[in-house]
Amino acid sequence: MWRVKKSIVEDLIESSKKIYPKEFLCFLGGDKTSKEITEVVFLPTISGETSASINVLSMPFDDTIIGSFHSHPRGSAFPSKADKKFFHKYPINLILSLGEQINMRSFDENGIEIMLNITGN
Image (cartoon, rainbow, N blue to C red; front, side):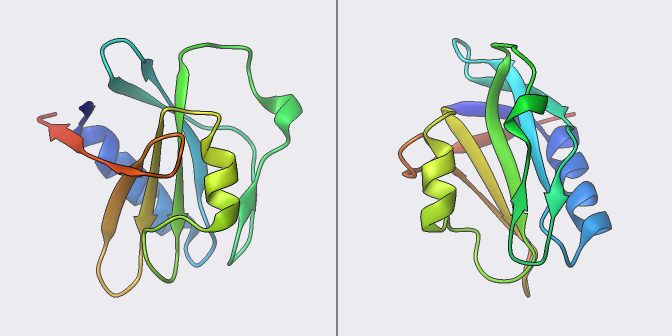
């Protein structure tokens, strides 16, 4: 099961709220072997109300980038078809819904929902 510190989740929620009503996109750093997310990796993105994108040329050549995160300003925390195509690059992908109730879900590289353990700060 993947793990992430509560403080990282709080940073992701706060960053998503700041850019609302646009989608927020960033990447997750950590260790695939221990299945631990240890950092948020911010890169320049283009954000809109229904999508967010990144220039792939701005991605660092770094094997510690293990996942992706993005928000859905409206709607559920389930992946779209486009999300699932993007997920295949990473073993852990998080979606945060900022709809009526804040909700975060985690998915593997195939778009299958997986458990995420949120640990203390």
